[in-house]
Length: 127
Image (cartoon, one colour):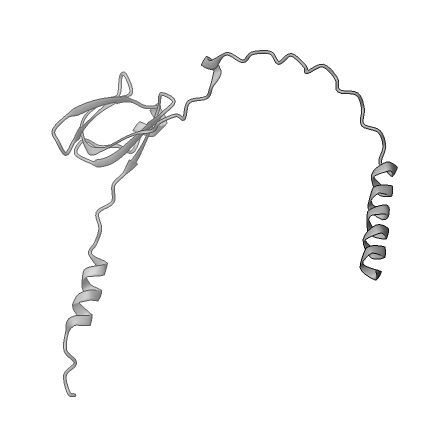
């Protein structure tokens, strides 16, 4: 009997809470969405990267020609300030994004890791 009484009180309590909620606003007509043209989607902009050696520098037109490992030559137009430190034969990394090229020199690795490995492989004398 206690189970039935407890169930009835619980149902009455929860149904009373549902009546206490404010009335829902009448459903408004769905707003007409303006169609967005599909052409306006932003496309992820790719960065073109070329590693190679500067084969020619044309200061008059602010262009450099870079020869990659496969032997293909590509021309890049740079800002005059970026051309100041470049020399023919220098190994560089050229990145082009949004039509703007940036050049970074490729530094030679001095082999610091090799000496550490060589030291680790040497047997210790005197033991």
